[in-house]
Image (cartoon, rainbow, N blue to C red; front, side, top):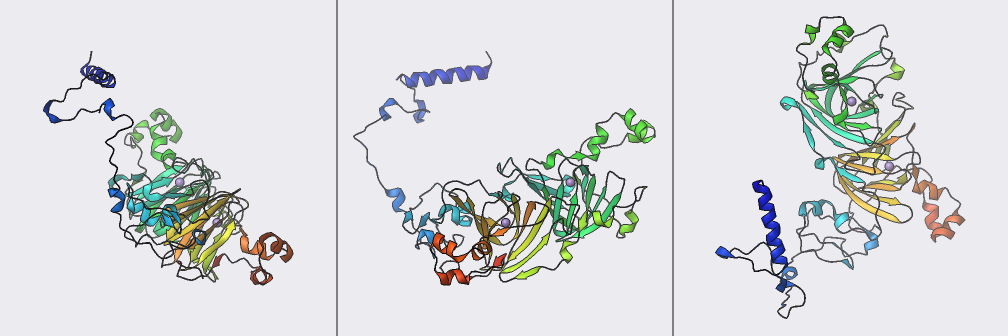
Length: 468
Ligand code: MN
Ligand code: MN
């Protein structure tokens, strides 16, 4: 018998003896691993105390004593010892608990009274994703997909950083890739099935799209770059892309030699492992120097893989601004429609839903909260911060309220041939008054004040802790 097998066998024997009331040895004053049967059941020596809970010191935050159905935002970030209490609901929490989570997720610790049941989980902080670190400090990438957000089946996302001059290696994938640059600048290039070539420099706020199978690469320019990638498949994994290094390494050298019409020795120094994210020589400033054109010519402007969204002015609305990029102006990305939304402090992206697609969202700046309502009666409120992913299934209603004191900015991405939503306000205001009054028991005066125009982002008081 091997020693570890012996050890396991003797432990099992000891456990068996203990369970059967056999005396347990207690040499050296160290208690045995298990107790005895004396601990079972009714005991006359019970002396229960409440000293644990008596020690809790806390102060409720503004709004916390209000009617739970008011559901005001509770600022737990600046509370010393936040407690799961809303009005007359809930009670103190002596722990164990993670204060870091509790402080930034007040709508989880003390949910509004309007929350009910269980929706899907509509939140994934990229900060909880495994970070894949690139070679030689060249960058990193972390992703959200169905492994961490099982209900997010239509889209997946990647947050990637490249240091100046670093590459995301030449590659292709089965999914379509839509991207928005979060900061910095990079050069992107691709070659499609017609042999048409594409190269462009993009910067913060610009978007690109690479169709399925079309090989491409990304190289950071002087400032480095960080960008968000969104894929049209919730099961996409950044770890499963077709890399240039791998396609060379996994074909026989004899075949490579025949394919390219050069001696096999020409491939003696190809990488023996993937590069993925790695440092490179700086790209020439003049993009023309890298403009390779073959018999296919260049990708025509109408089918361009980039769209300089950063130069599109935002459409101003009372509570912030909105700008949309979808196939109506960026046709190659035929299934990607997106809105970049800015919400001023106190403002709110109005209650709405998207009739034709799930929504995959990423928080770029600030903080906000959303309630996801799913038929028949499930509702969950989530608190989001910059770097978080949100996911709202098709036709499920949601809003996004700015809960911070700076502008909130996020991007809503849909799988749709144009960006669309149905706004609760516009629907109700555009329905015959008698129907609304009979259904919701609202006064005529109230109904008359509703706006028939879509608001996108409404303005509001920056004091979120009391009703207006
Ligand atoms: Mn890619
Ligand atoms: Mn939305």
